[in-house]
Length: 345
Image (tube, rainbow, N blue to C red; front, side, top):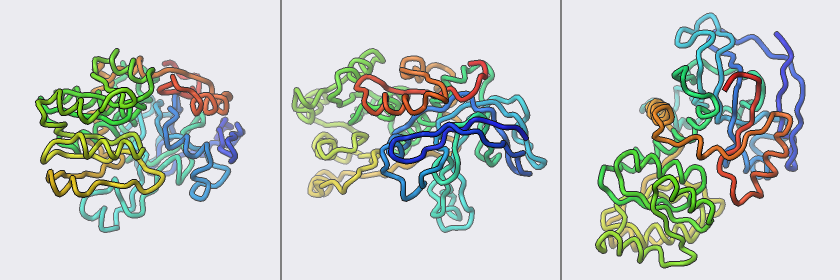
């Protein structure tokens, strides 16, 4: 055992970097030296106090991580000390109806590591061995910190059954929306992002993705005109806004698919008449499955996901409070990483 530094969320938009003792991993656990951990939208909800009832006010959060295996338990055989890894932060019960049907990622008793348990904003993190995925040693660890959100996007695209040549509309150009757009583009789709933030629009264009600014044009009309009046075959709602929900039913094609990705803070109004009239199919998409991680690793490793472009800031563990404050108020930032230890990138 040794002392490590860990950043605890302590409520009211504050973090406390504290010293704690690391604990040797149990028989089925692995201790990881955490290299980088990204700040995600859920972490920002925690920072803003929206999840205090769930996590309390003394919790190490964070889950978009990369690192190197430091120690393994006696029963662990899937990784070895020195392996570069990422964590799929889902610990399922294995006994509920969802698990018994093979849907462990939406387990009815799911523990999300970094929310329901302590997470990765610390120098060392101990997790169940079944959550690990090995990385190519050539993949930079800062880039690898984008694999978890990329797996979200891969799962979304897979749920939407996106096919090569289809017209895809992504509503919302934040980190997940941008990754969904890139994953759909890698699947061969013709992708458009709808976004009002000029910096995000510029980034999408730089990544070779078409854009619409719904503050300046009629986005649904533009989509229909660009698709010979068909509409988008698949629409991803990633904005979490009422205008986004309005656009998804207006822009989708007859018998198109709508994938609900965003978490809406309040119940939106949905035009159910359009679902009847156009025989629209709606699909929920939550987190990821192991195969989504495998594809995400491949996409980041082969450059299908431009990790370098998406990473707009890296700060130290001691600067975590400033990093959250900067990110929550920035119109230009995309993905901020926290460097949790002195591992080589």
